Length: 332
Image 1 (cartoon, helix red, strand yellow):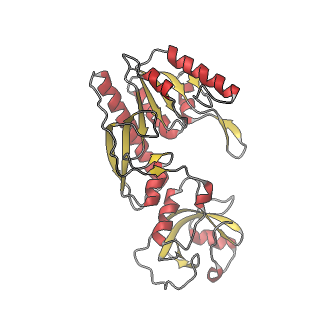
Image 2 (cartoon, rainbow, N blue to C red):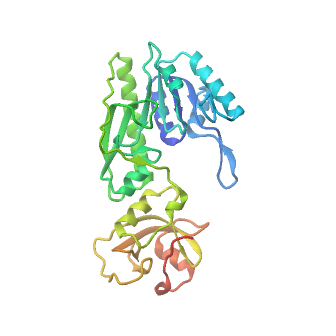
Image 3 (cartoon, rainbow, N blue to C red):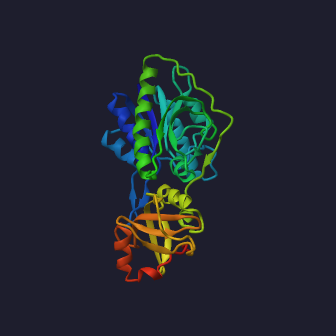
């Protein structure tokens, strides 16, 4: 089948690679413009663009697809992209974490007679966690399962009917990074399954999403990563794992913004809960115990500014502070 693929991050690139490996022809790629990244802030292509260039697939990078944009430069980009989509021959559009809203006139191109429309890989069990950050929000909320929905797109925000889905368990040690990788693999498999069914002439009838249980996964903001030690240990544990790898949970000690990358709830802790939240209570063989507003959390991996990730005991030793004097504070 001839595919127009729209996506940007590694999650999307994995699906794109699977589609290509399955023998489908990607005739055009839409992806976000190159962004400044890294310590040198050099312009960096998206993972989707990198794969497209490797396979000599044409790439378009408009800043918007809205042809009525108030910015003349963006308007020209959108009109050029629309014209290219209108002229190119394709069977179906696949959209994965693209980062731009597809206007109805773009969706209409993919729904022309003889075409199958637009399908989206969404990393949640819709209608739970529509929106930008379903993986992180599922962990933060304490969900025990999530999954992938292949959705027939409409003009709403993740409101289209689903044609295929599958579940994954969220383990107690799950981080957004590990869950991302498992969901990316599952999403790549399911979209290839959908394309094969379409190629075989199967009619994909979307199932409308339930009207109850709708939640929205708001974009992750860096300010959310500041640990509030007055929260309960399970809440803090979930946030630490949800914000790994981005933006990384933070808390200050001795004017240093430390990052916390992994944690767990200890099975048993012999500490009293009278210490002030944020107080370092002691070390285990693998981590460090810190008092929370309710309960104790065991931190397993930390990082000083400019340093490497390491065990809490090594990290604290490098500060040169006495264990009994260490107390973490929310970053101001």
